Length: 128
Image (cartoon, rainbow, N blue to C red; front, side):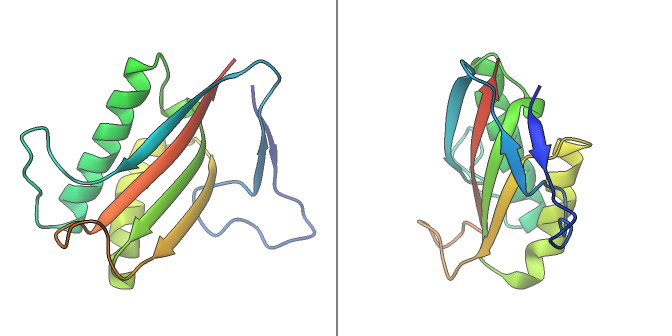
């Protein structure tokens, strides 16, 4: 469905992603706003693992409502507030992505909109 690019002339991807991805003509796009670890009841769990899991549950719910799934993701941008949480976030992310490889950007930032947020993820999906 999507043509991916990871040229042999550059370093291979360091994690669960591809360097480039081509969306075919006439694909329908869905832009997912930054999702945090906030639960449906408004509470925010304390651990990076729980927040990361909630983030990906939120993304999955939005994709489902849009008639798409995780396999339709073409771009994921993740913001994590502590470098020491990267591996824990990555493990949760990989649980949701499985074998799917979207393009990815991962940033360590000094803070998010609320102090208790440890991670935020925005995404773009496409469906032919």
